[in-house]
Amino acid sequence: MIHEISPRANAPFVAVDCGSLSTELAPSELFGHKKGSFTSAIEDKSGFFRDANGGTLLLDEVGNLPYGVQMQLLRALQEKKIRSIGTSIDIDVDVRIITATNENLEHAISEGKFREDLYHRLNEFKINVPALRVCTEDIKLYADHFREEANIELDKDVKYITSEALSRLEKYSWPGNLRELRNVIRRSVLFSSSDEITVENLPILNESTQEISKTIDISLFPKPENEKEKIIDALKKTNGNKTK
Image 1 (cartoon, one colour):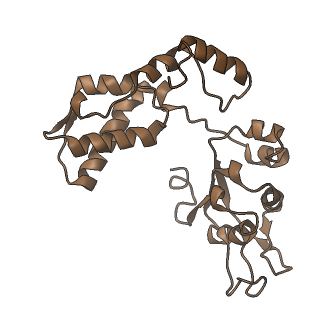
Image 2: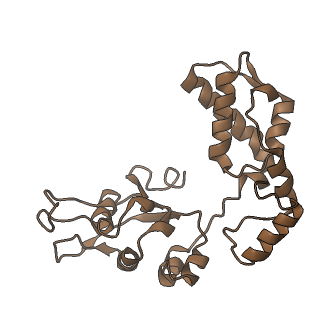
Image 3: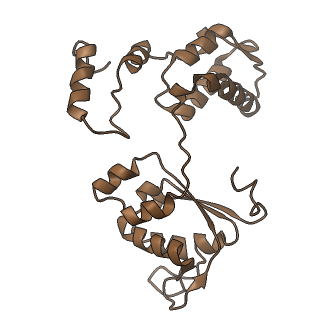
């Protein structure tokens, strides 16, 4: 959306999963290479930065970017130039960078997994996307969207979600966020024998998990501090039941 409403809308939008980039391949994937620069370089490669030139480059899960590549990325952002592997010429690039992560990068910095200088270079403007469990007023909108999406994909005609089913959805803690909600709605549409989703169509949502999530924060990320105390407190509240 940021790309599409910007002056760069007519230029390329390139999305990269940083988790899939190994230390060996990341420089080639990001900045390109010249044919013959290494054993498997059988042809020239432009790289993601040049592919997105004039447009937007999304670095998804940037926290997974290999540490050794982070310095190269920082240089590219600072200088607005890249150098393909096997060449000695810097190439000017004009790219808007958007990064996304579900990790706590400040914690990764303290553990030596992410460069602090790169973090501050990327962190010019931050948008925090809250977990679904704290946006219960949005659940109906998302559920209706996924219902319409599932109707098309599964060739169904489910028009409604009953108030009882919606209430069940809104009371659940959604540890899997939107992906989990989408899967629940798809399954419910698939098994619906009428034009509505009822409580009977919904898969079993673990009520005990819901109750615990309302009374204690047992998540260790993105705030892993006091880990031992959180675990002990959670065990006390569940009478030692580790499954709960």
